[in-house]
Image (cartoon, rainbow, N blue to C red; front, side, top):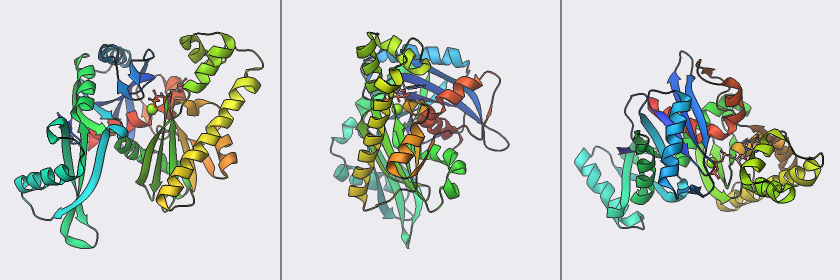
Amino acid sequence: MSFLKSRHTPKFGIDISSSSVKLLELSEARKGYRVEAYAIVPLSTGAVQEKNIAEIEAVGDAVQEAISRAGTKTKEAVIAVPGSAAISKIVNLPAGLSDDEMEAQIQMEADQSIPYPLEEVNLDFEVLGPTQGNPNTVDVLLAASRSEHVERRVAAVELAKVKARIVDIEPFAVENAFQLLTPSLPDQGREQTIAVVDIGATMTDLSVFRDGRMIYTREHAFGGNQLTEEIMRRYQLNYQEAGKAKKTGAGLPDTYNEEVLNPFKENVTQQVTRFLQFFYSSSGFDQIDHIVVGGGTAAIPGLDDMVAESTGTSASTANPFANMKTGSRVPRQALANDAPSLLIACGLALRSFD
Ligand SMILES: Nc1ncnc2c1ncn2[C@@H]1O[C@H](COP(=O)(O)OP(=O)(O)OP(=O)(O)O)[C@@H](O)[C@H]1O
Ligand SMILES: [Mg+2]
């Protein structure tokens, strides 16, 4: 297994998140990419809590189920640990070091910048290229995660007889997937400040991109589960029933929109505004040019318009598949519905082609 690095064989991305396991396999097509296989298998509540795997077996079963539903033959995967479980840093090292010298320098850097004993950490690095303005040094990306986070994820996919070839970090996956969103952004994202808000079940990740590069990322505890819980409470439904009702509207009274959905949408816009404030106050930026709303919760119709209205910034719903073809096994309608929630899975699947 390699932490961060890739080899060029077919791999699928597996995003293990709190509501589901999401599998996605892409292939390179003449222009861009093609979706070869995809499946989303729901997880029972508690199997993954706020991005940490609590029940390895339940996750293993879901991975197995995803493979069989997607019909993929591939046995190698790219997975990721959440940004909160990892540390990454760009360091400058002298140019022209041998591999051994580089390793030694990296160990020293890591020793200083990582707050855990190194024997409890998975460490990897990637030479990004010469430092801008200084030909004598190179920029090196250093990434580290507590081994237990990596090991639990690797073990979960191994239960489904899948080898985790690459362990990425979720924000890197989002950064990787961002290239799929740029064709539909103002000026293709060039010289623009773009926020991607991924609103999941329990967590919302805000990432900000400037001129195509990620400059900020942070996880916040907020998500669509708040709506599910309100539906459960108001209409005496269990978690599964409420989750279904939310997606289809089936069995909900006429007053649902007014009583429950609209207040939730208001809440989403307030939270997004608040998360942007955190970004502004920590970055010195005071403006965003466009907001991309992603995550499963972005499937709520009109949410992007409401975010646009309340923030005074244009907004759209994430669709990483806008310019992709799909293979014959792939259910197109389901993929279109799930597209906003597949950003991380896309970023991971793309690592196959590094
Ligand atoms: N059509 C829909 N309408 C409303 N909500 C939806 C719809 N489809 C999915 N959701 C909600 O989106 C959420 C799942 O989104 P997503 O798959 O992005 O979350 P996750 O990544 O598993 O969660 P987390 O990021 O918290 O770990 C759930 O709350 C689900 O009910
Ligand atoms: Mg998520």
